[in-house]
Image (cartoon, rainbow over all chains, first blue to last red; front, side):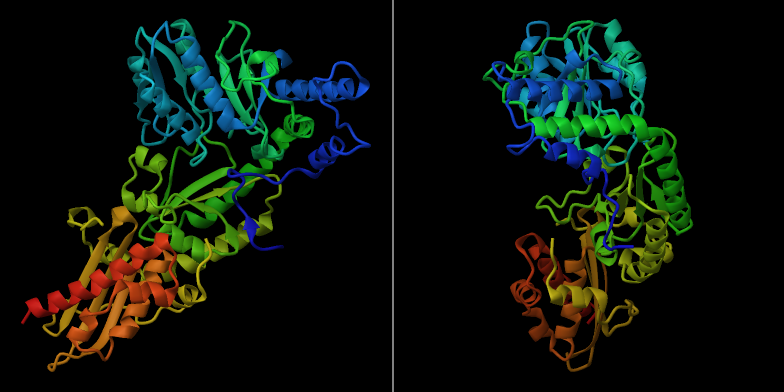
Length: 404
Length: 125
């Protein structure tokens, strides 16, 4: 077993070797290096063929038509294109957008930009389990609402929103529905025939494809129109100009093809490992799982060890590559906005650790992690004045802290 | 973010961790920071009749730099008079631990903690 052990698959994944091989075939002189837009010679045709296959493979994973797939540089660009593209195209219909406080920054910041342009945005609260209350969503819709943007799976806590139910609500009111599926594709079955979703964002590097490539599903029935954010040669039916990066796209296609084949088996194995990890940690006193455990991908365990600050725990767990909801490393010192939106208090938000498991996680690695954490929590709590006060029965909420 | 060796040393082998009876007349307690900000530091000093810090203890909830700053501070204040200890500057702590700019607030907190502990002790006199 090699250390550090990678438990940060929600941040990114290694490229699957089978994917990397296909990508390498599209780079050098003896490979498929042509410009897929070069329609006058065989180099171009061959590249176009590879793109077509990749587009099919991406579409297949979500049971969509390949014509509904627009390649972008990643999920961030897809989110930007969907949200700004819809807002700019349909602004005469209305200028109101509904999203959620726990969305990825790519969605939230796109919405903030639209607010600066004169649009109005409603940011929904979630319930304490991280899920959206459909009645709250319904109540937020107005006659001038043009777009609802809700993520499928949350990147920090792994909860799965009921996008099927939301799609029913939005379609009935003829409101466009965008879903950020960066964290769900390849982990949760997605069938565009069953979902009333108009736009969906994808990323390759979250499921063993390369970084720098993603896609936006743009539905054809009913037809979705949007204003391009990137102008140029009119690639991707005018929605996203720029020479198609054959190697990246081929990599994404192969990653999505493998995901379709291996998702069920991967999920079952990963669920077993996640449950093993949870079982090894949940007996520790004052430990809380963040987000609903049932409506959740098996890859994610976000857990707070109360009275132990996340970054110091990460320092103790230097053999484990995990991420923390505590942002002491950033200038803001703000704890995770997602955990705060769940109603978690600041101590718990600062004390959270996200484990995300993936295709290469082993049982041995899980057992190593369990032992490390159990060894270190006690030591850090001995250091913690909050733990001592808790043990002395002092109500921490009753203290007037001097915020700094 | 990479930590300096000194931070790692204090983090892995924190000096003077513990608690003193805050109600004793010769003990000064300073607790600064807030859980909302991700760090709470508690520094306690035991002061002799002639105003010399005989012993110091700390407990810190916070990142590695916050733990190291308070651990270092307990080493520095021992044997100092209250006036000398009150003159310790956060910049000296930051320099000793080679704290990066985003961690300077940890050293500020440590300076606040010793000042608060001294004030607490004096208020009991």
